[in-house]
Each structure stands twice: as C-alpha cells, then as structure tokens.
Image (cartoon, rainbow, N blue to C red; front, side, top):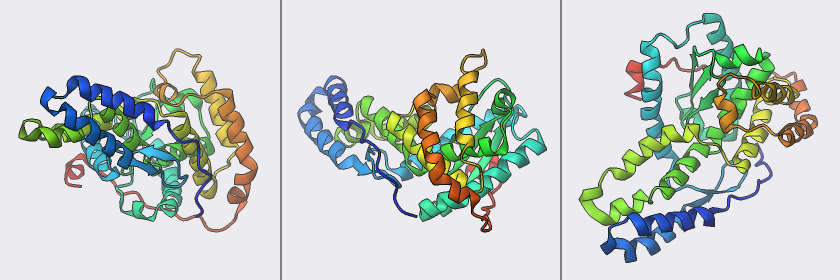
Length: 311
C-alpha cells in the first residue's frame, strides 16, 4: 500500500523550547549545564517521520514504550468497569462492533504489517451518556454506547469512527502525545539518566501516566487530518461507504449542541472544513468501497482481565 501524501509537520521547536525551559527550572542545579544541551540533542534525534504519511513527529517515547504503558493504562481504565458490570453487556451491540472492527483490522495490518502482532481487541462500554471511542497504542480499543444513543449510527458510520481511532494508533499518535506530555513535564528520560538512582523509574512512571492522559488530550490538527485520511480509506477498503464519513460528522456537530457528555468531540473537534475535506476524499475512496473482491476478516482475540496482565 503506497505512502499517503505527507501532512504539514508539527512545529517541534515550540515543544523543544518549552522542554528546555522546564528543565532549567526543575532539574537539579548541578545538572542544568549538562541536561539542557543533551536534552536538545535527544529531542532532535527523536524527530521521526510518521508511518503512512511521512509527517515529522516528536517521538521521545518509542512506540514500544507506548504500547507497554498502554497495557497498564488499559487495566486501570477498564478493570473498574468490569467489576461494575459495564463491559459488553448487550450481545447484539458487542457483536455489531466486533464484526465491523474485524473487517477494518486487516487493512490496518496492510498499512503496517508489523501490527499483526498487536493485541487487537475491542470492549463495548455501557455508558449511554458518553459519546466516545478510542484505540490505544498496540490495538486495544473501546466503544461507548453513548455513540449509539446519541447518533443512532449506521454500520458505515461506526466503521468511520473505528477506522479513525485505529488510524491514530497506526500513525503513532499516542506515542507522539505521550512524548509531548513528557517533554513539557521536564524531559524525565534525560533527567533520569543524568541524575542517577535517585530519579530511576521516574521516566517509566511518567510514561504509564502519560499513556492514559494521552487519550484525553486533543490531537493536533495535523494528527486529526492524518486519522481522517487513513480512517476513511480503512473503512472503504473494508466495504463501508466513504460518504458516511461526512454524515457522521454532521451528526457529531448536532450532538455538540446538546447536553450529553461528548468526550469524542472534546478530543476530535469537527469544524465544517473537516467535513469538506472528507467530502473531497469520497471520489478517491469510492472505488475501494465498490470493489467486489472478498473482504478479509481478522478475528479479534477475546481479552479477559486475567490474561491481559500477562500479555
């Protein structure tokens, strides 16, 4: 599958300046003359090209660390819901979400073959007041029933939601947001190395915390454009109508004026220009949708909380 047209690069010097200022204020005084230039070099080395689009990314946190930290965050977020009986309550809804997701994942793997080793899974969270969905680094996903209550989506529209979230994981957006969070919090990766045992473990603790925080932080405009572009193609290749991407965001716009809790809209702003950009992509995506070739399916691995710890 060919690489997509690169989106605009993130202004990484802004993050670098914030990081260096934070280090000067927070690092032990004796280490400041050493930490600042070393951290600057680390940040420069951490600028990488995003998979799929080639956009410039700041990745202090490697994707492998983001995936490992996401396992902890996943347990912390969903274990209480499991105990409260709020996961996968409606077999029909769960089957619907799983079926759609299983058709999307093969095309995600086509983008990045190494993701075949991810722990692809999805949990339906019974929360009718929350309009949200997410996909963590490593393929762990969640879909809130509030999306169904508020939007009454078609299968094609649900595919757009899940395709968009999967695209965030494919493009390493969680690792990117974790990197930005940790950079702004002092650059603990470098401080931990230079300050010795006194600070050992701080970087990993920060990563575990940042993994959960990253899900609630808004993505950059460039990251959202990437997820829109990749997600609509994933859905079209899986046999879902790309025109539903536009109707989905039209529904989202109406929900934003209501009284329900819309976490999805807080982290995924939906301006009119976004709908226009997706509409412009529809003609390019229709041939994938209209292709009558067999649609591959990737069987998700059922994940229980007892086994999730060992993964």
